[in-house]
Image (cartoon, rainbow, N blue to C red):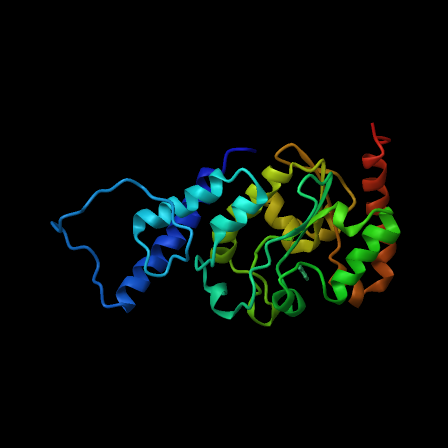
Length: 253
Ligand code: URA
């Protein structure tokens, strides 16, 4: 779990490389022709945004995020991210919030409008419901858990994130999980759960059962936004959350 998955990292690098080459093209800098001298230089870590950066910078930038030793370092390495097309419509990168040593982590899909404007996950109507689940249901403070999303920038019109966007952002989610090392992850909704589990099974089938995410217990449940539309299913989420509470209390063995 501590090592980033090679395929994911390669996908993120490929997306970054494509965008870098497109930016060079837009800036009137052609692709390297065969035979062009290629200057080699030591890889340097770049903290500013990648616009105008070099390929070396780009690789160092991704490596820096994977080498981060804290959530603050990871956030700094993500910088003013331009790694996927969601950057063009966002107001804020919504990195994540909460206790960096939380026992319990919630993972959603991606920021909505409120989250994009405020830069914090789950602060809109669905977020209020999630906060109620945490504070009134589980009986702990919102600040005691860690909350983040699969993608850190708002997809336009709240559409589902696309595969290239997930590929660009997922390494950061993995690194967040690796840094927080929660005992339990609650996956919120079909998109987050299917992304984490690499599964196409319906959330209605996955929810309520324990799964493993690289050795961490994962409880899939319905997304709070779905519950706003289908309040009758709140009781199912409560069943799932009761299992999480038992596990946190060490009663599930
Ligand atoms: N929905 C999500 O999946 N994440 C948020 O942060 C807000 C709404």
